[in-house]
Length: 302
Image (cartoon, rainbow, N blue to C red; front, top):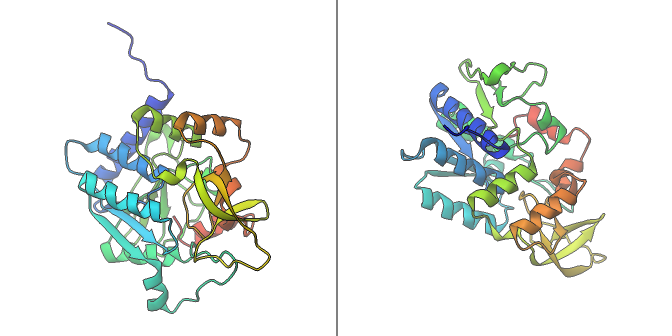
């Protein structure tokens, strides 16, 4: 009998599938947080592997800030139709009106922090006890220290000092009424792992991940797409550049990078050569403070 062998991508896939099945067995009403970005698309692919030929077991939940890239929204809708999944969309704009929240005002006014209110309302509305997300430990230091099963209190808040041990891939999803768990099946993956997996399985992605022409302004060394969601000053110079996106957040807080990478192999070569993480290079909202992500997570962010 030939020796059974799993390479590193097979091992990461196996771990993620195990985590998905743990979620299905331990929780009554889980949801998969879906944005139309590469990480959440990979999650959907892994979930299909975990549960097919059965029905897709979780609804897809998108917290829509209203500042999304159109390409990501189109892809979101198309993928939900393709897999026959239930897509739930809750809009930050509706939360702003309902709760009379102040609209952020700045050159790159981001609604990212306000997503927390909408997410917590959606969790309460549908009584979700687990929300599956595509966060990875290599992205940012707050995510690096968060467990795969991340327990949130009845207010949706995360306390990094009260995390459960996860020895030998044993995950404890026991929670009290009102609490919920954020689950990160690809926490141990890197950006390069994601792209190698996408290449191996020929996973389709939104076009903005590949090099294309786009009108941008350059601000503090970052290329920000021209859109109705940013304030363009008279001193800003609008140019058309060939760019792509390493990560897909809001148009108001996600910068592009100059790139000629129109194929996956080219993107993989770029990632191998870079010395900056995707969020470090492109996410304007993470530059608010050294602890910007951790502060948002403590308040209930993804």
